[in-house]
Length: 92
Image (cartoon, rainbow, N blue to C red):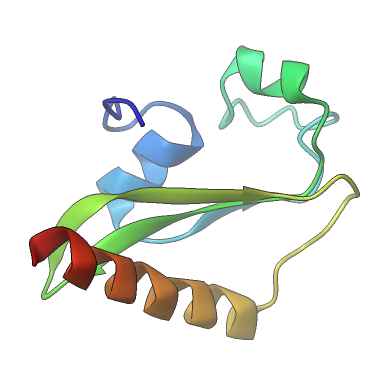
């Protein structure tokens, strides 16, 4: 766990926009969304979702795969629901 710089890197952008942010292949991404150090992880498909509860941000959750991967809208929705459950635990 670390402090998220809002607006920087995948976690910061997910936190800022309160929406999932994903990259199909971190190793070939040239959008500049991911921090340069992210490429050192050797992961490819990656998503970061905000941990939200009642419109309030509690953090972010990052998931990565070792292969190129685009998360579906349904997977994003499920991850957002998981984020809400995690946020409930943070609050209690």
